[in-house]
Length: 110
Image (cartoon, rainbow, N blue to C red; front, side, top):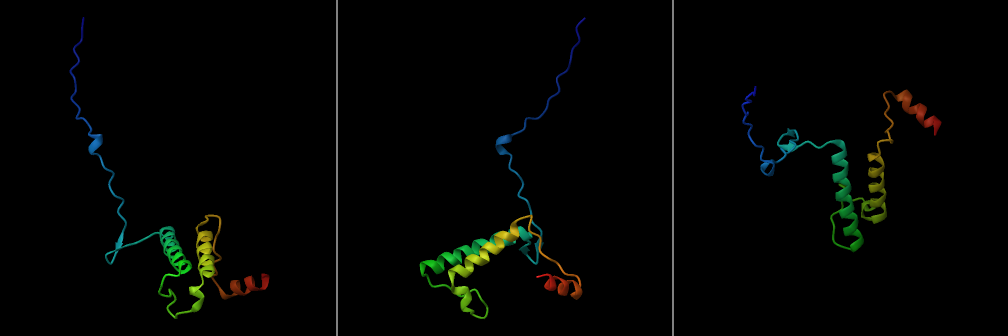
């Protein structure tokens, strides 16, 4: 006794035409909202380009709103970049103060 099994037609999946949907970021007033990490990485990239321009002697606009000459020294910009790199480390936690008493207590411990 033989049994007849009907074949179920399944549509083929066109993997060649498959594209991942772009991850949409929330917009705020028409601009993309970046995560804290993305913002820091973007800031590092801008500072690195600024530092390279300073080292190469290219004319640059001072990034300080008050035209502080501190921001025209490449070594100072390198320190700023290192600080941003350090903040990207997940093991580094910023100290947050909730009261003035906490802040005073931290200063006494230094």
